[in-house]
Image (cartoon, rainbow, N blue to C red):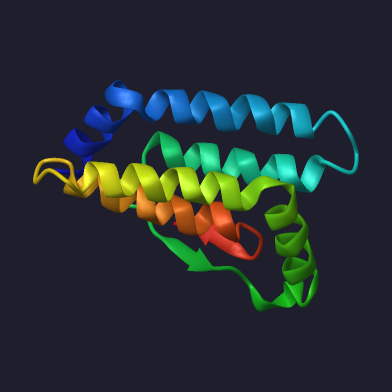
Length: 122
């Protein structure tokens, strides 16, 4: 069931999200200051490619307050907008019975888009 969901996800819009995250991540990686943000966008692109059957888990606790500071900077630089887009898409998909699994994936992506630092995708 996960394979079918991932294939449908990729064919009907998921690939566009992956390309968006990947290209913006590459642009962030062009500067030294933007590399941590670019890596988080690459992590989000990997999650957006095959979201079914994957979960977002807390990362190792050794990052300390650095992940909090980076998440605050992330939110100020556009993380809220990305999360809102995924929340809106999640609500739109959940209107129909067939779209509920895809809406739930958008809700997971909204959580990762809001606070990506200190999280791992498994």
